[in-house]
Structures are given as C-alpha cells and as structure tokens.
Length: 456
Image (cartoon, rainbow, N blue to C red; front, side, top):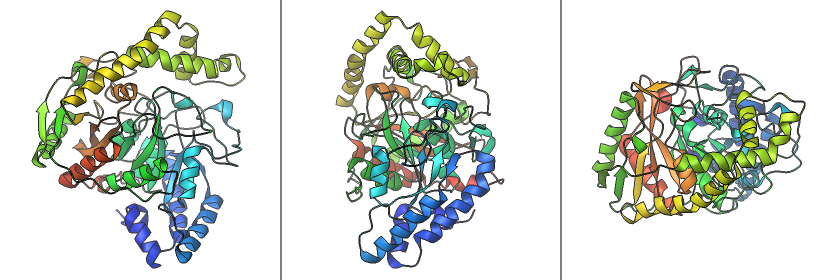
C-alpha cells in the first residue's frame, strides 16, 4: 500500500506543513484524486467538495506561513451527511432532502473549520441514521474497503469507508446507537463515542436525541484524541496529551447479556484482552447485567422519529423500508410504553454507572461478527438464532442508553476482516479512556490498512 501523506497521522502531517516540506494544497489534491479512484467501488461519498477544499487548503498554507495555523490546519476530513456545511446539500440519506442546501454550518462543522480542517466531501449515511448499515434510496450501499462485497456498517458507514480507504485522515460521525462504533469495527478504525451531552452540535440534525454523541472516526487513538479535542474545545484548544496510566481495574464481558458471537471473533478478542493484562491492568472476566436497554431505546427513538418525520409517510417522496417501518411503528406507540421508557432511562444510567465503583473500565466485543455481505444480515451466530435488528451488533447501544464514553479499537482479523474490542469508561472520563486505548493500540501493534482489498 502507498504510504503517502493521505495515510500519515495528523501529527506527522502538521509537522510537515509547519516545516514547509509538504503543502496542504498538494494533499488536498491527492485526497480528491483518491476519492475519484475509490468512490465508484465504495460509494462512501455522496458529495465531493473540491472547490471548498482548495480554498481551505490555500488558507491553511497561509496560516502556517503566518503562524496562525489551528490544530487541524490542512488536515483532510470528511463530514457525515447529517451535518450542515453552508452552501452545500445535506441529504440526511433521504430522497426527501436530496436537494436541500444548508444555510449555515452546524456546530461541530464550525469547530472543525475554525481549527483549519480541509473538507474533502460529505459521506453517505442510512436514511435519517435509522439503520446500522449504510443503505438508502439515493444510490448504492456503502461497501467495506477490506471486501467491497461486504457492508461498511452504519449509519456512519460512509465516514468509516472514507477514512479506511485513505481519502481523508479523519471523519466526523455521530453515534446514537453504535453509528460510529459499528462501522469503525467493521472497517478497522478507532471509533469514539464521547460521554453523552459533552459535545453540542448547535443547528444540526436531530435524531436519537436522548442518546446521540458527535465523535471522530480515525486510524489511530492519537488522531481520535486530536479531533475530540477540537470538537470539545470549540476548535481552539491544543490537543490533549495522554494521561499517565496507573493499573486499571478492567471488567471483561466476553458475551454481554449472553449474546452469541462468532468463535473467530471471540478468539481475537481473548488475545487482545491478554495484551491488556500484559500492560499491567487488573482484568477480571465477569458477567455484568446490561439488560433492559432495548425497552428504553426503541420507544424513545420511535417517538422522536414520529414527532419530527411522521409527516413523511404521507409525503411525495419514497422512503426506505426501514424508515417507513419506523414511522409506522411510531404511530402505534403505546403512550404507557413511552412513559415507562422515559422513567427507566434514568434508572438504567444509574445501574450501569454503579459498575464503575468496582471497575475503572468495561471491555466488551465491539460487534458479534465481522462485516457481512451487502444486503443481508446474519440470522444465526455461532449456531444460535439472532434478531435481524441487533443480532450482529448488540454491544454498542447499551452505552448510548447509559451515556458512558465508549471506544472501539482494531484488535486483529478474522478471515481477513477487522475485529475490534470496545472499551467503556466513566462519565466524563473521555481523555483517560483514550489514553488506555492508545496504550493497548501500541501493545497490539496492528497495521490494518495493509490488508485493504486489492481493488483499492
């Protein structure tokens, strides 16, 4: 694989720009060329923004010359197509918004632009983020860079495929039920869901409001830390530095709620957990109770969809089958079930938070399988029947419901496809969690992107 600047970590790019040995304009042009090369196969982008990127790259080059460069100056990024960029279409993955031009930048985008980021384009998303695979009626499904016959996951699947295939260094995503972590797991990336409520997106798209977090998709923990710092500090703060890690108490939950996982995935994760213990951490294999999240998550998501988008059932635009099903279910939602979910949310958060009196970190599988074929979902895993909705990825949403920060990290491969581990931290312990992830990343010493599909 070409080890050119599109594959470099942020710090190396910034150092090259600062020394004048590399031009942000040059890297911007490389990114557009790479996008044109891979997008016909991956369908990661719904919109390339070469004119915008060129203007931003020119500005970044000038900022390095005059000493005003921000922490992301000249760094190529992608923006999930639920975030607004002024003057550009925001489709939300839906025919109903296919021609909607944004009148403003949403809050997360404003922070990234103030930090000097260069926007390569907008990435594909499932309709209104309502699917954990990236398929909609605007065009083909987003494919996985390791095997384009397989899914990239969703709903930030376009963002994951973009970063993993080398069109950009960082991707901006959002995670309401695993929408950053699922595609990061399938595509060999670090995917970070910050603590709920810590990063605002003023003026942005609204869905999964009780659970959603804005966050980064990146190739390394350090790059994830850099973008998280920008998102959480209004684009003006210096990147956080790793914490000194004393031994942590880690609760390893190999099969949360007794859910099945593929044997090959389990083997990779068991090896990763051994490496975590080798770092000096106290790892205990335990069975913590995360049950009850579905009864909270489903009603609250459906209620918001019905309120915000129920009118689309009677509109002129065709909807995906999954969005139509969600809106029809919202119309039938029992008010008593909704009230019970609202009450149970606070109780669930307290219950999961109590585990952190005994443990510093919770570790789980990121997904139950590796990326599966486009247009299909597994109906059995490890010989056990599973539901279509959550069967392949039941381990992410509990921590949207609980609100805790959660990161997935590439841990190895099964049959040539990435496998990831999920690490969950205390409320507000985002930077400490990223430090642990960075330590484990160094211990595992993986180079996932050397295994991309030969077609790319």
